[in-house]
Image (tube, rainbow, N blue to C red):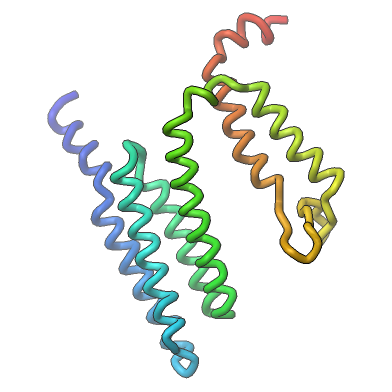
Length: 195
């Protein structure tokens, strides 16, 4: 690699300017929402806005410190989430605050899962059949025990306590299944695909 390529890659790894643009967008959007609901503005509203900005900034800083991965993917997710949660908050503030709480839980689970897989990744590599069966089990449990809601049968209810969508977990196991397949693609090509 020549010197220009190295400089370009170093610029890509530093999301500093993009992070400031994301923060500026959040501040401007929240300011408009707060101006629109000035009569309903309270300390909860300010905590919501500050929480959104701190959470997205902190998650991007953590991904930069904890991995060699691309911080822009999480920045794009944070941008889409910011647009969505600000629009929800504009319509019904209590629902926006609830959505922000769930996103915070999701970010914590993301980093916990990342650290878990970082420590145990050797155990999970190449387990195509395991991930295939787990994905299939998620779909079958949903098919057998799921309830229909607005025409889609994808929720499993546990009384009035909570409900869960196992198909969302199936998306994750499906990604691992495909990764396991491609990790041993040559082996599968020689045996399974040639038959």
